[in-house]
Image (cartoon, rainbow over the protein chains, first blue to last red):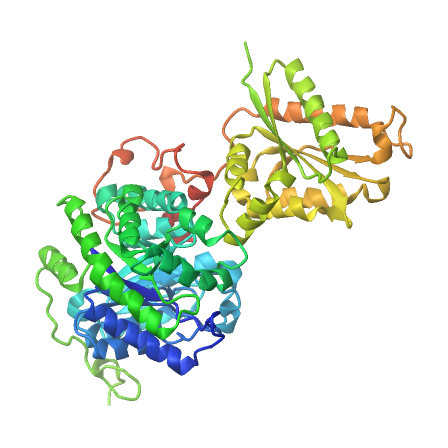
Length: 386
Length: 241
């Protein structure tokens, strides 16, 4: 099983001091979080995508590539990648580049986005959001699997004889999860392709998450990718920890009460009782997160949001350290032990390559494309006779 | 042959005790019971005063999932065969509490549900608020709205005389109750929750046949997933568009 952290790169005032990080400071912290995550043994660092304040993550592959250069082992992922307002050609290119540069330490979570105006900013129409997401992902899926693509659709200009470069590393595209909170359509999409399904889980009661995952599993089996219990599931989570649980409660309360997402609604205690938010000791986090598999079955990835709501740098780094050194070792041991041998482990590039080899033989990485004319991209045989 | 028991949920957004909104709600419930029993149904009525859930209603709207006593309210709503929803008119439309309740409950809960609407106010000045402001909300929610919505001004509660030449409240209430009973009688099967058909599914080449291929429906009309989690279009259909 894989464990890690995700960030949405929000710039939020610290309610206890009034201090607001600068964009530069927030970016520096994001990088620090990733490096520390690797240091404390976490498997995954995931980054959101936003195109408006108060967020600073408009170019996720740039950030992930930088982090990739400074790390050795950690998997770089997203939370999420917009499959609506991004050009699928660009997604294919950017993430294949990242895949090569990091030797396969990349996967991504497709999301439709939660900010309405992003659609018109990128020339899209939110009213066709679902059709757009479906068509865009279908194209992306092909671009990574077919060397030369001729394609026509509704939401993007046509492609004639197009090759997305670079071709995926070892002939295996980055693993894709589909992220959803409320929409069963996404569970259906994930199941159709045999891709993973990632449910954010935080901010919602587990009874919701459970049903969405159940739907995905049933449809995964329906589409013939394996048994329902063999589907690939990831969950989000959120925690704030101190050794002493009362200290955690006292310290986090002003952050909770003033957070844009939580503030003004149910109390922190009520909210924690009904959602995966745990404010307390590492032992309490372990106890709660051991129960998730009872609701969604044996799952493959658990990510935590630790830097939310305006927490200062030092506190965030302390949270990551506690997660990596105290919580995850226990969760990993217990959850790996309960998972049956024929339920797959979390996807890795190596694992996917091995599976592809078993099916298709060893991939031949020799460059297959004529370089053609530098200016027009034509190959020799396309040029009119000289 | 006995008819199934009809479960009626009555929602009153009245704020006072006693409340004329609650009085109208009770009257509409009584008329509905009368009409249903005449058609041979047993009737179970459960009445919720939204005032008692007010804080949880608001919290549920802020957290975007049901909390506190809203959890039970949502359960009752999902199990109800029909709903009688009554609100005072504040400032030309339904009260904020009534609207917040609608905003805080998942839209799927109302789809295909017979709903009888009622409203109260001091005078008949805003009686058409039911038609202009409140009925459209339930159209949007895809409820099966009973044709007669019943407005009661304070004066309507006194005696049998009509106000401004309109039909007396008792008669209007009976008419609405009868319409509700007729609507419930006419229902023969499950509500029109969207559900994919097996024929529209595509699957990748070489995929193994599963149990569900051999004759049964591709997805069982499962009773263990709430309606909102079965509302999707199979990928085969979406990709062909």
